[in-house]
Length: 505
Image (cartoon, rainbow, N blue to C red; front, side, top):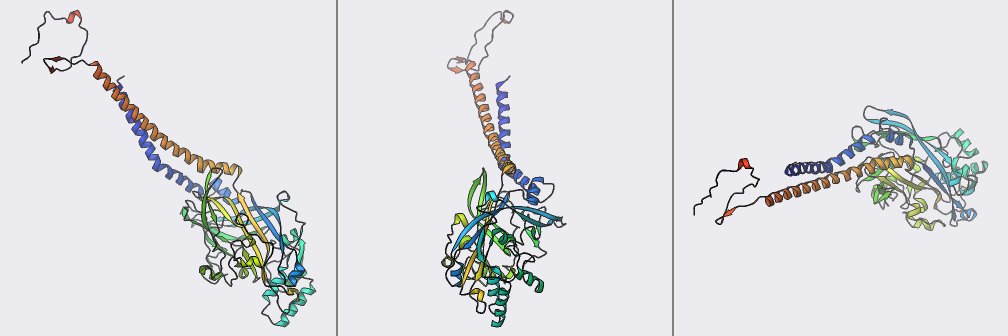
């Protein structure tokens, strides 16, 4: 076979490989992004992503820590509260969406139910452990009645005594979490229905277990993937009415489980929390890797719970106290309740002066969310919040004694979860391995194509050099003549006579 033709064939093949590899460089990411878009649309046909969205199969846990008051008698006399942290008491959280209804405008509505199961093996202690915390019914109602006539306050105090409600509660963790029988609660629900958020037993989480977070309507992403998971309405509302400004009443972002894909470091994670009664927003902190999967870590900005004086946009959440406290009384039956980060992390340091035994650190008390930026799927989540009661001495209500004015931490809890097992493997394969293989393929094609072209050039030049070496050159009288091909002469070809060639001088 003619080596020149082989060289031409190799050069053509090499050029095609280089072109194909170059096309993959530009087309490959588009193909990957297109697959991400198709798989992230909320659609029962997308089996993996739809199952993750509907039933949230990722292990999710809630760890609860109580601030046990060590000196209740001294607190009643006006001294600083001294607390010790007890826990965690860990509960497995099951999340399931029900009443799922798809609408013609590419939205879907659902009710999300949550159920908690105690995990003794993961807990430090048991639900039978006894702790002492402020009595929210007594101290909360006392602050709420502060501006009522003195006689009314005295009647309230007599009511507390009648139902044997004291300043502090000393009960088991299980009772404080999921409810205990209270004659006062029973009386109020009978004669003043709607006054309390609880209708049965009274407990910190009694209204959370086996309940839903309201009716969410979110975008499916079918019309625009940039809208997927974003809230269209909550309980039929597009804005809230708890706060003082339109900005604070906005329902922003998602329901807090997944976000739209293709995030950048400038992206934020807005979400609406029914428990906090407002929209919150996390900001980018740093890059990271989890099990080979690239991620962005998002954290709470210091302005999240800042007061209106330190951060003007939060003025609508006031009346405010020190920065680091969110007043949620407007959505908690006007009870003087405040939300903060655990141990008053990122809050005004003066709050630590009022309570002994608090030691805030970012590692233990800061919240974060690790998310895969390409898909918007959280890989590792740790949401930490603290529930506080504002308490003080109220004249006319003897149960308040001489209590100093203080924002008293009662409990803090962490809701955490992370992708693991088969889901993590599938996630890693589809969103890391396959795009990586495609990336390697494009450079392999380019490299192999260039190598093939180089081999073709070497083969061509080598063949050309060999041809020059095998062809003789006739020189007569200092003149280079045309090359003469040498071949054997047979007897039949031999001429009868030879005549010398003559050349003009």
